[in-house]
Image 1 (cartoon, helix red, strand yellow):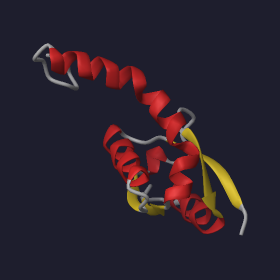
Image 2 (image 1 turned 180 degrees about the vertical axis):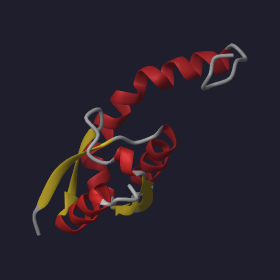
Image 3 (image 1 turned 90 degrees about the vertical axis):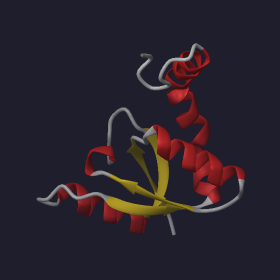
Image 4 (image 1 turned 60 degrees about the vertical axis):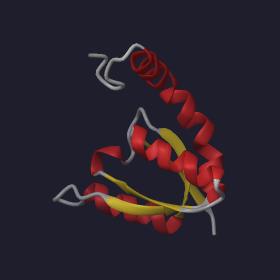
Amino acid sequence: MSSVKVKILFTKNQASKLKSAHKNGKSVAIRLSNEQLFHSKGVDVSVSQDIYKKMLSASKSKGKRGIQVVLNHNMIGGFLPLLLAALAPTLISGAINASQGRNFFTGE
């Protein structure tokens, strides 16, 4: 079965789940909102034809529904470095905030 490259915008929490799943060699289920699908600022992910069809259907739905996808260890490994690199500036500033006793996300 061939795969299709799509752009998906992952949240920090989803990135953390993906990193943990990859480290442990497991699959992970991720819920994606409609806005995360085919996002221009997302990372390239190779998905199966079945997942791609689900994504297309969700993006065209009138209710703008999201989907849940199961990503296996090999799929995650293909895009995880790109995802972590894209989130690095946010994670670094969050770590600095936390080390200074401020809120990790807001800096307050």
